[in-house]
Structure formats: C-alpha cells, structure tokens
Amino acid sequence: MNSKILLSGATAVAAAALIVGATFAYFSSTATSTDNVFGAGTLILQLDDDDDTTPAATITSSFGDTLAPGGSTSGFVSMHNDGLIDIAEVNLSATETVPSSPDLAGKLNITSAKIGAEQTCTTSPIDITVSGGFTTLAALNSAGIDLPSTAIAASTTKYLCMTFTLDSGTDDTYQGKSITETFTFVGHQNLSQ
Image (cartoon, rainbow, N blue to C red; front, side, top):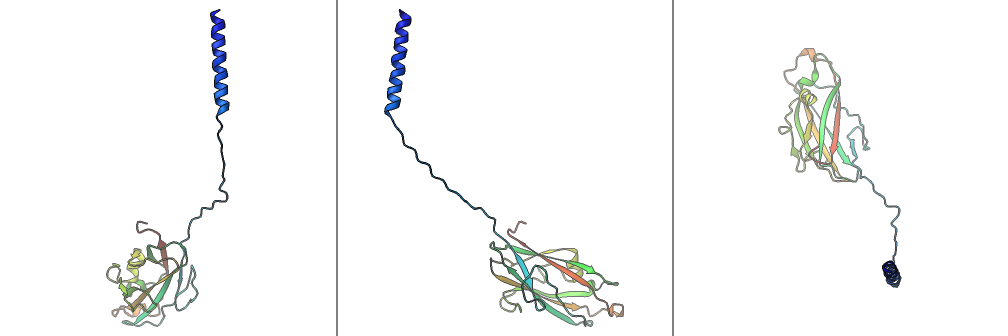
C-alpha cells in the first residue's frame, strides 16, 4: 500500500512538472554575421631619387665618378610610405658590394646628412650627421643607423639628403678607384623594432 501511495505521489509530481513546463513558452531568435573580413594593413617603403623618379622597392643611384681630393657630391633619396600603416622610423644600412683596394669607402667622408620634407632638405631639416655617429662611408658600412625623425605617415614622403666629400688627404693610390654600395632602408612600424 505504501508503494501505491508513493507511486501515485510520484505520478502526480511528474504530471505537475509536465503541466508547468508546458505552460511556459520561450521565444528564440538567431542572427548571423557572415563574410567578416580581417586584414593586416600594409607598410610599404619605396624609394626614388634624381636617377629614378618613379618610387620603387629597388633603385640605382649615381653619386658621380669624378671626385678629386676635397671634392663633394650630393644626392637625395625619397622615402615614400605607400602603405596604410604609419612608419615609426627608418633604419639605414650600407654594404660595399664592389670594394676597391685600397678601400675608397674609408676616404669618403659623410659631410652632411639631413632628413627633410623636400628633396633639397632646406626647409626645417633635421641634421643627422653628428647624431648618426658615422663620419665616413666605411663607418656606415660597419653599422646601420636608425634615422632620427623619420616617422612617415601613410601616403607621405620624407627625404634623406647626403653629401659625400673625398678626403683632402687622399693620395695617388686612390686614383681611378671606385666602389659600389647598396643602401638598405627598412621601415619599422614601431620604434622598438
């Protein structure tokens, strides 16, 4: 008899649960967001100068081949940020790809190096000759430099203007010598790179 009472009670509880559960209705709605695109921006450093007037990743410059002791040659390189992300700074390194013997790079003094807003670097230039810590092309070959004040916003340009002077003490052993240099510019998104 007790089992009949327990079974009847359990049946009543189960029926009540079904009635209560069936009495409450809930609505649901589903929405979908499709074709979500995530893309990395671009940081594209391109160069040009007097010899190459269309910005490109690789250019060839000529600084002249008629230097006499004490003579100078100047040139500029335009640094264009054709990307979508700002460049925080540019690192410059140099590599002597075709050396001379004796080494002409040690006799080529960097007498002026400036960062500017135009190809002459005359309007409010930043002089980096001393702050750069390099005085000769040979010194630049042995250590790259983070060019100060080279933050380049997306779609803008800055210029590096340089003057090289053949040391006035250069002797006859350097006559007719030439070297070939590769200047590598690396744009960094962050100063910590």
